[in-house]
Image (cartoon, rainbow, N blue to C red; front, side, top):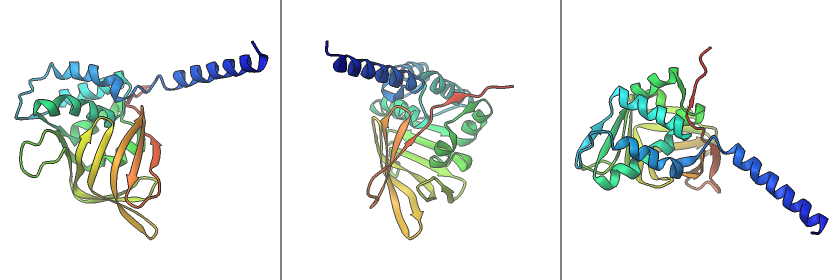
Length: 221
């Protein structure tokens, strides 16, 4: 074998091995879907109704996200894949999510800011059971603004996404991004790779691609 070709193959193999190792701590929604579905089969989910997560349910879901090496968006994605075709809607209370922060890192400042976790009353998603519901609706204590790196994000007291599909939170509503003289609504969040997300804003030339870190367990001294 030509030495140049052999060297190229070795470099390619090393690069592939490094990338595989580097990404082994974030596996993505497609990988986690079966495990999340198995967990959901253990809940009393009734078609045509809203399931309200208890504090224990929320704790178990966050622990499951940590075990499956996925972020909060990917967890919602996996749950939605299971409940939507079964005509079920899900509610999770913000206070229960915040209580988990003593034991878990929910994904860092980006995740906390994009989902407005600090003032979240509750989030609901899944099948549309009543008029006015969307694929995902989040309710805050009040309208708020927060910095999310691409600019200041202005949240109405209700925001969310009109449609969800695997790896895509689409048709956002209730979120406006402002930067200098630029002002436009957030359009969608695409989970383009495990532990990564692309944030699309109207009239922005290209999406902002970020690491959206996975849930991890905090090390207690």
